[in-house]
Length: 431
Image (cartoon, rainbow, N blue to C red; front, side, top):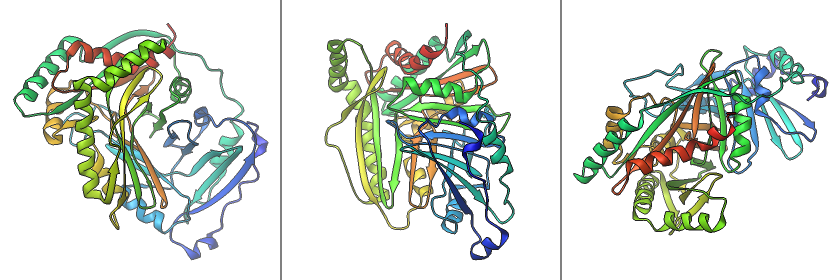
């Protein structure tokens, strides 16, 4: 992209705020045929930074800087008094009450950006947001001027790998979970693992996400960097937490996993296992039942697929059931988030018992892994479950994956499932 392609960034004047106490939005369009890359954020001078793309090649969004931050309810109230089209972005840890917090991230963080860039068809749109006390455009202009100086991309090599927990401790936790399932204390619990890779050279999180996007076309793609020193949380999640358009809301249950095969006959056999094995059906049914319970509380009317479909990703395949409903009047996005997170797909069932088991038996801090991440506007909202995710800080990459433990689970097979789930990341890292 060439620096001179955007028009002059003329913002509002102080007099324009006489009509509102909210945020004003100004937009500029450029008609060029090029891809909006997450690497555009490498030169952005303001934090926080976020890149978002919906599943299956949805329209990409990048944003940086902030004109406001706060809770979902506080920012939603501000949006109600601001120009239309403005979004808040953000997310949260998997568990706010976790006794360990080793992440250089806040527990939750939501913000309205200073600048937002979106791509629709052949048009790229820049929006800048203004408050009465912030009428500046110079930082955004400086960012535009630097977009044509992007460094050449190189894949990083891997020096070392370690897993927390290692397989021996993982196996012990699985066996303990199966004992509690057998005794009726749990129906399901999701046990996660952190695989840490020391890289041979630095790579920006936005370059890494660009590589991951090429391997995971059917996923949500995200990268969030709250501060200069926090590192970045990024990933390619197959799972939607919810999508709202007006009062209509949809979600999905994704649980039960088998690998993919390049051989069509073998891939079909693995799909048949996924559909037919009692362990996979049980794991999926528990998620559907819990989401149905949440929809009954949130909606005046709802429905879900009678039979699960199969969601085929590049390296794994899952059972998938869609749920859809109409929200009860006056329910907020904050209440939707509270009602749907965490799902049994990332925590377990019953939720309280599964959370307690995770806190007592997982040997690392999940942080934002498996938490909600997405955006909200007045008109609509979309959040993914931040699985298939990682935290990159300096030259250390922490990659997360989890597996649902139910009656019939086997520790070695579940460990192999974790490897299947991170195989896309392993594939893009140079040997």
